[in-house]
Image (cartoon, rainbow, N blue to C red; front, side, top):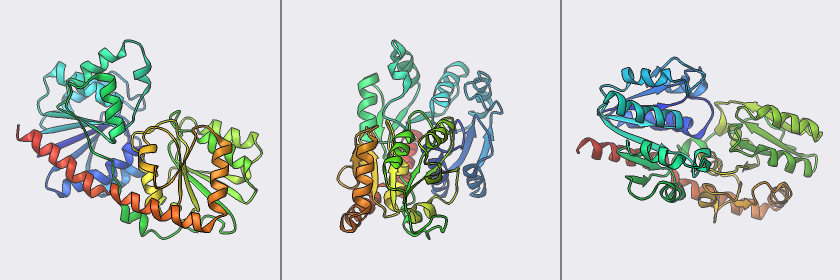
Length: 357
């Protein structure tokens, strides 16, 4: 079975991290697995996949992933595969169009990585999305909430199913702690791309409300990073907020931190949340779709955008060792439900069922 995954890039993000963990496991099951990028920028994720033996192709029209030439490039790259699996909007749209215009054979699969997106708020765009989704043989949602909201948006006459995202839980549980942080301080960490979807500003404002021995570390990069750096400067806490950019030692950083936070406006099923919990750390998240379902009953939720409540939750956990240990243990147990091996088995079963049709 020959499988091609198509994604915009291998920059920071949950879908990108998923490629690194998932594709080698699919290959190890006996499939021939390749990856196609619209934006071939060199990144740590790209280097990891290449070192794992995954072939990577590039359309060559980066950095604009919506460049119309990507559509014609797909005519060359999509041929000869049994399964073509897309991620992200640009790839999802152009692959569906390529299937229609060029008569590309093979079974088409796409993954919905979020509970919502900006397209769903554009009047009349539902009809366009329905046409695009109709070109796919399977639509995989990464959480039950993501599936519910997609069905509510486009209807029930589509082949939609849920396969929860997963991570290599052992890699985070057994990591050695980094020595980057001062052990005399309480270190809060958020691992997330700097995009409009995320809400790093609320965590920055919460940090300003905490005592001076509380420091916050951000891992990731993106278009919203400059404004977040400016906010820390404006609040006079630049010395207590660290921006590390893209890192490959995330398990070690999570192990070294005291509390893991994900402040976000919405999610599909956040791998960052599962990673934080797998490191056996207390996890605090915005009470929003895609996080609520993963965190409730294990970690702690706060009202989206409420910096005062977030600061209070952080301080409560940091200053109550019994509560700290209880939350950390519950988070660790919850993370085991999202191991990557279960996800790889489910994806492979979908591919096999499509190939047998």
